[in-house]
Length: 308
Image 1 (cartoon, helix red, strand yellow):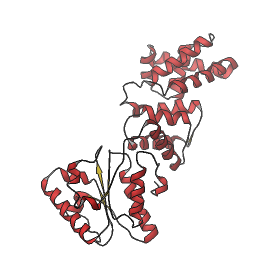
Image 2 (cartoon, helix red, strand yellow):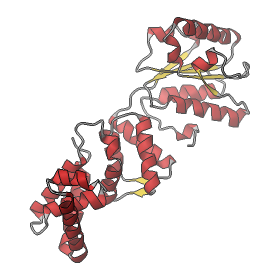
Image 3 (cartoon, one colour):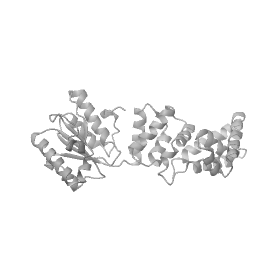
Image 4 (cartoon, helix red, strand yellow):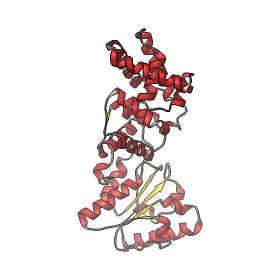
């Protein structure tokens, strides 16, 4: 994946950290600490710093695990900027904590640029005790993004992967999928393996089916319930439409859910669920009225999927 500063989604919750890292990468901010929750871009930010320095100044500084650096598992040129990840891990035991502080103290004393990333929801006094000469450090937090910021992150990830997704799908991933940026990145990768454009209402439902396991941590999410609700709403407006048949068709042929799960959700045998789905498929091919009803169903589903 592209690791340039332009690949980062600039948000209210991270823009100060991005600015501080960019100043560090340009040699203008020698001691930086980035603090934030897991999975929201700290390592990505360090990778951007490393790549920027390599491209602009020919300085190749490897990102090191803090514990590996403390224990000398990786040899790096001490004259080069030091990029440390997972610095919070040094706080768990006294000896690594002391070793880290002494190592950083030497670097601060002789002016060797150093940037460290620590995982936490906020900067704590315990973390401050890791950093010698606190006034020398530029400390910035990466906050948990809001729902709107998560949507921007989803859109940025999709753009970087060459994936086109609808606004409705971006909103669903941002608001209904739990987890962090790594979870969202995994979902984007799944969609990319299937195809590169997810722009229609039918695409939105199909994507939710492919990603159904990613919503498992959200107890309020049940794709089958939402499909049933949209199908029942459509059947009320289009009385000639067989609601259960539409439900089975949408679950099996659009969302690609398993027949057993579909049968259980529709309270029928698996063979019956498949029969109903095939019946609706034939009607869809033969009847303009059925097609109109189906389009209404898709629009309804796309509207209710992001809702609680």
